[in-house]
Length: 193
Picture: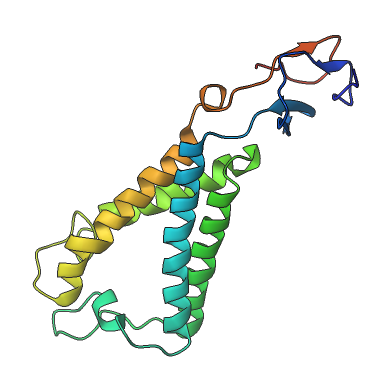
């Protein structure tokens, strides 16, 4: 059988199945099977949600106004607490698009920390600032406060949960690793399948 490890004799045994893919692991290519259907559904769901939110932000940056007033926290005077510039709104859209792309590539080991950071961002948004947004906001009766209580904060909690599943899953349990016989592999770290 051909050697897959560039450092030594890493051979795929008879336990490997058709459709196994190679993932870089500690400098060697370790064959692993594709993620489960449930894991792919979580990945696609998270990507669709964040992609849709990114598209709404692009719409607002381009001058759209539908839903904008209900999406901005209000000051005590009733006016928006801040008015984001189109560039700031595009920056948020770009960040959300990157989060969406990370969700689609969640099976890659290099996405572990970007997904964890995304989970933290949505958790922090859900917790809030203690005044205007999130679970710690002060009571209010503005359109934003109602939307935040009914939609924005629960959505952030759902997104944090979805990205958390993607970021913190146990790779050995959710991926059925092919059986690999490690001959005299000289890689820097030990492999575990």
